[in-house]
Length: 297
Ligand SMILES: C[S@@+](CC[C@H](N)C(=O)[O-])C[C@H]1O[C@@H](n2cnc3c(N)ncnc32)[C@H](O)[C@@H]1O
Image (cartoon, rainbow, N blue to C red; front, top):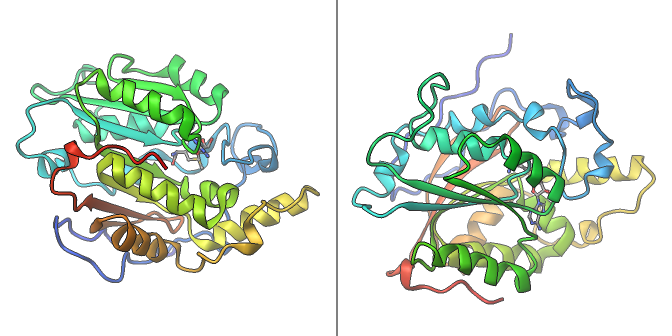
């Protein structure tokens, strides 16, 4: 039996942690994302999920393995004085399993047998979007919290659609920014489809829109595995794969971009999943986040 993964780093807001995260003891060989073909249910070839829109993603990367790395009471610690509803944005939510698990965890509703009502005094609304309309439809149909979690079909890289859509959602709450954004296992797909400039623009956009940002970047070996899967299917490489200058230690590279170019600071790393992905929390340095407008770029 291999040893269990190390416990997550303690959570100290405002503390910079280096190295970013302890490496897990149970990383998958070669860092391959388990392909849907090895999942318990039959599902299409991974090449048919070119945006990472795997139909059974949560079966092979369980939400619980991620949310359990987050400390209890996180929202209270991040927003001790918040009287208003807290607003979260989950980018690339797939069919919503992780979004719902995050909602439950953040509100202390892990016990699924308990009444499906947030604890008194806590109010969290999540807007969850994905490029894949079929996944969003599934998420809507199975959501246990339709009043608090909204699912939307949106390509987050389509600035013409996202600006009015996100502004309209925020406007319902009289807000112009989200309190917290979640970007879980999405950066690689943005990077592969939009290149280095797309990744930078994506991170700049999220940082302009969210006071806190929780990111789970895919490590570089996942890029190679994704490209290999495409080649095995006889398809062309991702447009940008061979020309990406942002490569190597992706958690480190993304941290550099967010901290040097996007006015964010690394608050902490909550540890790594058993499949070798770090959970990194960033905070905007903006003195008045609520006053900042989403970048139009
Ligand atoms: C690997 S899945 C991660 C799902 C979920 N966040 C999780 O960690 O369990 C990546 C998701 O990002 C979505 N995605 C990729 N590019 C996107 C884009 N440009 N806009 C919105 N969603 C996107 C895919 O459709 C897919 O559902």
